[in-house]
Length: 163
Image (cartoon, rainbow, N blue to C red; front, side, top):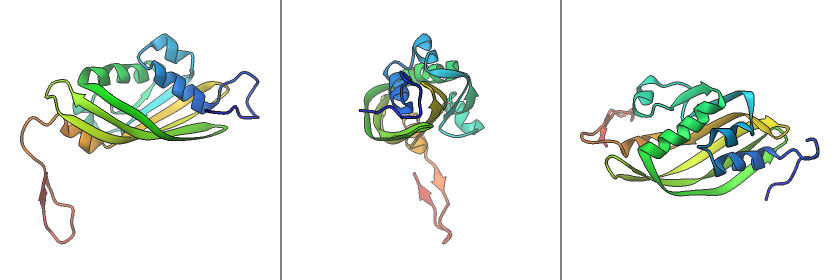
């Protein structure tokens, strides 16, 4: 259970409580908008990666609450959520973080993936101005892989790995 910070106005929810309230109904714009500032920024998976955006259109940095809501709507179109478990959380007066795991099954190919996740949120006075969501993007993208493999050459000894 989250506690209210002593530096917040009476009645203002803590950043962790606000983040959990958003995640309780993230596809309802009116619901989410009451918890975000007018200058809200959402970062999904990375700051900007155009090749990834072709696979996951929500990837990157976007402005406005509607971008966060659209992400959750789109994720629901691309995957079925089998599990979303919060394993730990932290907060301070200006922000909160959640850590956990989720299991999704891709709606097109029926491939299931489990990934850790981390969410960073910034805000105060009962509203969030920033949310950043991170996951094992390499793993989740593979739930969309129809055929083929990746040839990876990362080891300085010159060896390759086919995944």
